[in-house]
Each structure stands twice: as structure tokens, then as C-alpha cells.
Image (cartoon, rainbow, N blue to C red; front, side):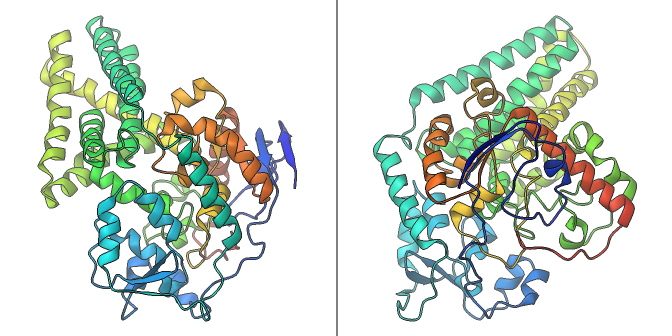
Length: 482
């Protein structure tokens, strides 16, 4: 075990990446690495009956192959065959039929939900036979993790702050007012930057926290805040975002599970993305240029697809009139504000609104990608413990730097956020410092990159994967263990 700081030298990794990692090992990513433990130490597939066919199916398709479906939580097996999970198909990511244990996932996702506990207790269930159960992966570490979590709870790290919520709203109002003032002064570029990066993107950070119920601590109010911030700030659906994002949170960097990896043909984050994602065509030239197009083109294009197709469709299907109203208001009210302060036509004003939304997508998705897309991927048939998913497949970025914390809305603390998704995010920089002794104790490969280093790793990986597909085309690439 060691604590190692590297600047301009190679980044040491515990695992070999399934996709390209030469940008990290050869490019000298600035990083701080705590502990050098191997992810595979003392680990094995918990269910020997899980066979190769699991690599070829989506989780919901695998679930359909079982006559009865179960999840195991705190040593009790629950029958979820006939249960309609409010969170969607993410429940199939943790089926005990496939060898998974859902204890930490359930506790962290539903920390503030009494309703979830009641629903769980109402399901058919039985204790797991201690004599026949297979050993839980990282069992000793998870018990210690649970104890450390209780200590953080006692110290108030999970307690929301009304003052902080008020600050976040005041900040949004100030940024919208500044963007409007700049638009009135006909400083169009400056206005678009403020509207997009410091209003729209910060609405993204707020809606993200509302989706995790970590803003006010009241689930109903957090969801109302999320609906506003996602709808008015990004013309998007918070509910749709939750459905997609929770799949990332449950199993970050896991092939066929993490929605943030299922991005082809617009972008490929690992060397077998085209082969292992859902079948789609792709362009060798487009992928070769993806390091250059990802931020200015692809990220804006994705938000437009959300705004005009995916998220409105979801709101209509689910009859979510609240979200539909907020999304509609973004198009109408924000365009009307621009028209009122500039005197431009509706078309020209809407064009400026569209420009702010495109730039918001560029800022948001680019920053999200720096926290994990360049890291190892997990094979689709492999289960990891909750702690190892967070530590080995996400990173923290300069948690001690208040400017970076602000620029990234505290989502630079991704390891801590994945460990504790219901923790108010402004408290996570301090928890990241407290996590260092825990990482040392259990020899975990806890990675902290500089802001520059995270960008370098992200673009280096995009360039290497693009080069791979440009040279080799679409071929079946044998995956290595994550």
C-alpha cells in the first residue's frame, strides 16, 4: 500500500482497461493515488451458473430468462417477479439470480424513503440460508464501510442545509439576471456564456441533486425543485434523467448497464463500444475525430435530442404535466425574455435561446465525462461490490479546490457521490478527505486527479479509442477483466 503523487509521470492503475488507456499511462495524467490494491484481490463470480450468454443480453432481457426473480438485501431474499419497480429496470441490475447482492444499492438509493422500506417489507421474502449462501464479495470491508457511514451520519454529513438551498436558488436567479442584462446590452456571446454555463449548467447541477433527494431532504420538495431546474433550466425531464442516471449510479462503467457508455455511434468511450453496445452503424471518420467533436458538437446535439425528442416523449407517455409545463416554459418564457430586452423577432430570439441550450449541453456533458469515461470498463457479466464500483470506476477531481468545486457543482467528488448519492453534495469535499484513511486501510485504488489531468485523460481516451476504430474498424475485441 502506498500514497503516491504523480505530476507528469505515468498513472498507476490496479487493473488493465478493457478499452484504450494509453492516454493515461503514457500521457502523464496529473493525479494523486491512494492505495494500490487490486480490484480482483479475493474476488470471484458468486454464481457459477451464470454463463457466457449474459454477455450478449441487456439486464431486462436476462431477467426474462428466469421464472422467478429475486434480490438479496441484508441477508434476506425478496421475490420481485411481480413487483413494478418505480425506478424502472435498474432493479434487474442487482438480481441475486445472477449472483448480485443489492444491500448497499438499496440502502443508498432509498436512504430517505420510508415508502421504499414499506414496499420491500411487503414483498414475499425469506432469509438466505447461511449454511448454503456464497460469501459476499468484500464482506469485511463493507461492514467497516457501513460503520464509517454511521459515523458520518452522526456527525451530520447527511443533514441538508436550508441556507445552502437558498444560496443555490439565489445563485440561479443572479446568473439569469446577469445573462439577461448582458443580452440587453447586446453582448450576445457573453450573455450566451452566462446563460449556458452559469445558469443552464448550474440548473443541471441542482436538478441532479434534487433527483438524488439530497437538497432539502424532503423527497417531494426535491422532486419539485428537480422538475423546475431540469424543465426551465434545460428544457428536459427530471424523471427521464432519473431513470437513465440511476443505471449509471448502480453500476458505473459496466458494459450494457451504464447508460453513459451506451453512446455509439455519436461517441465511443472504450475499444469495444461499437461491438458491445446495442447494434448501430458507425462512421470510422466520425470516431477518429471524436476528441475534437465531443464537446462542441456531440454534447450540444445530445441535449437537443433530449429537448426535442426523448424527454418530451417521456413526459407525454407518463402524463407528467408538471414536467411538460416546465419544459414548455423554457422554450416560451426564456425566448420571450430575450425578445423583450433586445427587441428582436421571435425567430431571432429563439435562435439565441437555442444557442444557450447548445452551449449548456457542451458544458454539462463534457464535465460529466471527466469523472469516469476514461476509466476501466466492467464486463457485463461481472458483479462488483458497491465500494469497488465507486472507487475503481469513478474519480475525484481536486476536491480541495473551491473553484473546481464551484465549476463542477461539487460533482468533482464523484467517488464520494457514488458511495453516498443521498448526501448533500456541498459536504462531499470534506468527506473525500476523510475517505483517504479508509482507502489506505483497505488498500483501495482511490484516485484524485487534477482538473487539468481529468480533461487530459478524457480527451486522450477519446483520441485513442477513435484512432482504434479508424484503424481497425468494427471488430470483436476480446474483453479483459476490469
